[in-house]
Image 1 (tube, rainbow, N blue to C red):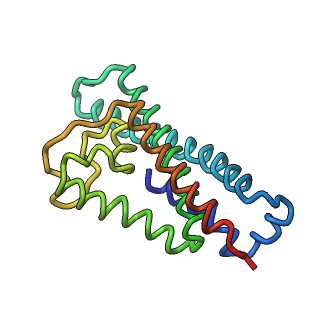
Image 2 (image 1 turned 30 degrees about the vertical axis):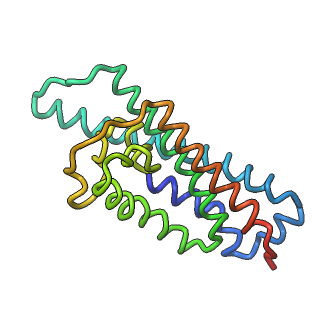
Length: 196
């Protein structure tokens, strides 16, 4: 899912990196409109990322279970729900990535920021303060895909018990709100700055 966020950063900040943003904004002077178009594009790409990830993970897992003669403990409906959650989580994280890429404008800094947030900061915060863990965006996205709360954390935070995940709609709404908030800040600050 983090790679979907990285793709969103690349979509948003790539024009600044390659100095083609001037041409884009000359063709479409409404910078907010360009940002929305990038979010829609990244969300579509995130859907593809999530779908591919869900198919690969499900296929490998079912192959492992079948090769060892185990019984599949999850029904088809639950597996489909987890796959739908992976698709939605990746799509929403791609939109968050667009907001981050538009806010920071540096492709390298945005990509590093996505990884540091998802792998380090959320692991630390979620491990230290289990009450806020469900409200962290990357953690909420992983719970959409059926990962237990804190299961995507690294280091000692991975095994810290406590808390329960947000309901599906609330987790999706939280990530969408984060994407909108970051993009709104980018629209009011960074996107309005001179790009030449």
